Length: 139
Image (cartoon, rainbow, N blue to C red):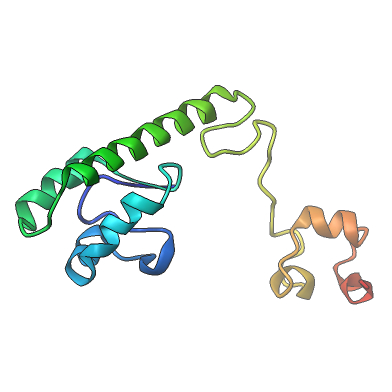
């Protein structure tokens, strides 16, 4: 989800991943309109603050009534998605099940199975019966 609220907020999807809103407006302003028209509000939303900043710093950018109507529709989609997402009490604030425990790394630090192959301590305990040197026997 990308919620763009300021000109320096960055896209985390599409061909401009990692670029700020301002950079995209300068390089390809049509892309902003394309996102509003084609990308759902569950993926990307342009908030009111960024539109106000856009009007001040890029007055040549045309914000048509159709653009604004579609942007408001995307905001409504986002709000519906956020409400549904937050109603599910099984998840914590990061979107993981409440009983989720992040994998640990360290007990087998220095082993090829962990350092090179990326297996967690729990993986090594479960898959390799606690013997990280047994990684080579996986078919």
